[in-house]
Length: 416
Ligand SMILES: Cc1ncc(COP(=O)(O)O)c(C=O)c1O
Ligand SMILES: N[C@@H](CCCC[NH3+])C(=O)O
Image (cartoon, rainbow, N blue to C red; front, side, top):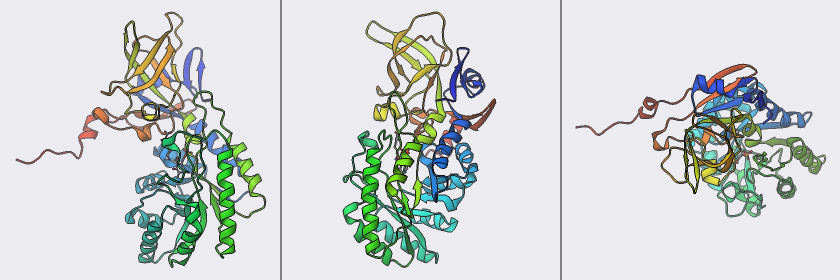
């Protein structure tokens, strides 16, 4: 969170006090730092300099076109999982030739558009998907570059909801079936087998599971070579964790160095799909304290941000650091649960937090740049938050706060 620091007791996004942003744009609001996004992307790009490689930012982590555009300008590729994400990438000026398409249920129209735009590769997740893609490609008289998402059956050691590399996950094909399925893919006229892909989970804080997966994939690549199937690229997915509390995940440089070390002199193009490690610490969510509700049992700070704005605490019991936008010099520190206006007991952004706060104060939820706005909803018919990007001392609104009219657009009552 280097780009969100206190200056004279006021929390700033780059050079701008967040209280000024709240005044202008209201709350809750997501604030992103352009510099933080750029530096996080460049950590990957620079560690791969001199190699044939592609860093495909995982759009799902934060899909605002302002965010995508910052990365596209640096030459980033993109990992997408839907037609909507593809259209966002194009609108943001991304290069379709640097797009990889993941996801277990790609529709025909999604495949068609991706083929027409000439994306880099489809990460295919099942045999049935191979057939569908082959059919769509043949109808367009095109050949689709593919890799198979292989499930290496390693334990990523992360939250079960965000662990994806075990046998019983819905993603990818089991590594034991991979040779057979690759052989089948190779026999299909409108597919071109290019790569091997895996993604074992998110918020990994150790290198070991990545290397375990890599080892299994390299064995697979060797077996495929013996069968006459040459793999040109290796996509290791995303998954590198960030520090939310006291985790010390490997840096992208450390991670990539370990991967390159294991690869030795194999002539494989490397593809990565980082999401969280690029966007999480490039963003905060600011929210205002509406009321304090203190009893002898419990103190609640009722804030205007809620689970519909940021669902990670409610969904994964994720801990997100929450800090005041301005330090108070007087008053007392008390222990609060920070709860939103949504009618659910699970509507909290933080529990048992020691804070010196009063109604009207602003709070910042840290490391909220990834899986924050993108997972937000209109539950309780709440308008989704505004999003702004700070660039040195400039503040750009990159998504207007939603209005009730926006929400009601498209709805209608029965006739008569
Ligand atoms: C296929 C795929 N690639 C990349 C990512 C991005 O992961 P992360 O945000 O953990 O880097 C995900 C999400 O976990 C994913 O499912
Ligand atoms: N949305 C999750 C991560 C899942 C990643 C999607 N493959 C989170 O907030 O931690």
